[in-house]
Length: 136
Image 1 (tube, helix red, strand yellow):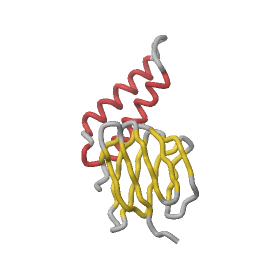
Image 2 (cartoon, rainbow, N blue to C red; image 1 turned 120 degrees about the vertical axis):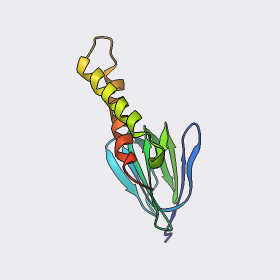
Image 3 (cartoon, helix red, strand yellow; image 1 turned 30 degrees about the vertical axis):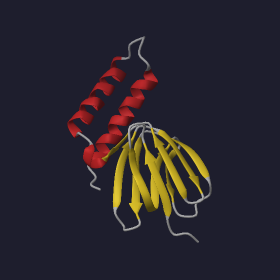
């Protein structure tokens, strides 16, 4: 039985991670899930939230993603993120300002407002704030 996974995490602008890991936790649309070695083949849509990666040397790394897809096939994990940021890259003031703007938009509820888009903006901001407090 294999004791590790190979993870490739990419966004449209860069490769975020490529290497051997022992665990990946990601935010699915129906809740968070964890992938361990020898996981069944699997595909999931991702929700805005936190990705937690534990490398083979025991280091834990955190990323904020705004959505995307994850595929597992024969201990190979491919995570395609719409956007992704490492915990240490997140500007907390900017994330908090984004959260406030999204909350204000949802409170004002104008007729021409896209409710779903405003809720997603709020979820992205919350994910960035949560992840920013975690060190890799």
